[in-house]
Image 1: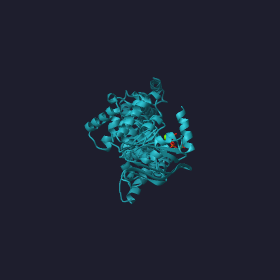
Image 2 (image 1 turned 90 degrees about the horizontal axis):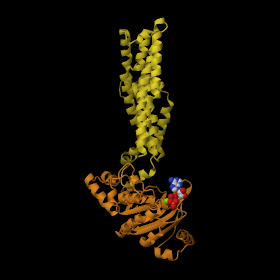
Image 3 (image 1 turned 45 degrees about the vertical axis):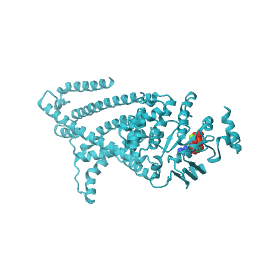
Length: 256
Length: 246
Ligand SMILES: Nc1ncnc2c1ncn2[C@@H]1O[C@H](COP(=O)(O)OP(=O)(O)OP(=O)(O)O)[C@@H](O)[C@H]1O
Ligand SMILES: [Mg+2]
């Protein structure tokens, strides 16, 4: 309930500021839904939603896959199998998102070409690859702690009834660990949604990019960025509502 | 090699870091033989039987189970197919029902159909006398029932050898006998068994041979009649005095 209160507060503040637009210091007219120009602008800004969501969803799905592939060898008892996974996680965590984005977008195609794989990476996939890699270090750790929370006896029992390593993971360990893995993974989705704003820098037409473009033509940064923040707020609050629900459901399952 | 000999353990050594857990352990087990292993806490009993199905790795020496060397390529998997194991903490799969606990191995590792696996599982649940619990979750069962489910789960894989690691230590006293009864029956059916337990009544009833371990070594072996009558070593004698007292 408190969360909704905050939204209404913000909306109220916006409306109040909009009311001041007559005196010339405010320019809420740029996003005034009662005028044709305001409607066009709003439609342009809100049009970035789909790209942001698409970007975040695909990046999250990729990150979840990469994270699992990194986490599993990271738990091996053999240190040489463990090592690459540890190195990957430490490495990726250390690199800031923006430089990585530049490197993937401008540098990776060059590397691939020189390796004999001439590919082009557009802004959409450049952003997805970067977000997925950068987030995968965190998802890997989420998998690891979730899987390690399952007692060793479970794996041992599974192996003694003849299951292979992957069958043990699939039928015994992961179904039990999922309760501890899913809520934090959903939380990472929020993180990705917020980080996807960086995709604007390489020209991806998502929420932030559209706001930037409109600011350039309308010269109303305060009003436009306020709406931008509101857009993220709505998006993130909806997702976090879902995360809470998931946490409650998983928690209830556990005590069953 | 003696054709009858299903487990051969030769001068086994193992340490955890600097700590030597097993020192030159030799033990041979014949088909159908029931062996009870006892010894003070930390003497290496669990480690020894966990080496037999590859849950622990050893540093030197060798183990051969039913002619398969554990160190051969794929040896561990082949040995595990012959060896069942029952743990002190049951280690049932809490997210599955009792019958699903039993059918998981047969279906995934043996490729049985659900129908065949269910029939097999019910047969073994009858044998451990809890067919009516088939659809429950493990946590809704008493400790004694859970351990019987664990035994049935192992039996579903038709093992040639069964390992028990203190199967009754985690149980309330009134549930111990229901589990031991199942084990006695298993012994009567001719199962080869390696049992770590301090239940001396059980040992007397079913053991062909007792193995006493202390400090990572096998200190003494003998038939129950021999050792209960007159243990050869002072260490075994004082151990028996201690556990038979209470
Ligand atoms: N994974 C491990 N890492 C380090 N030390 C271990 C490990 N497992 C066992 N040990 C040590 O090895 C020794 C033997 O352990 P083991 O479990 O085989 O003894 P045990 O005879 O089964 O004792 P208990 O009657 O308490 O079950 C103990 O001192 C124990 O602390
Ligand atoms: Mg033990």
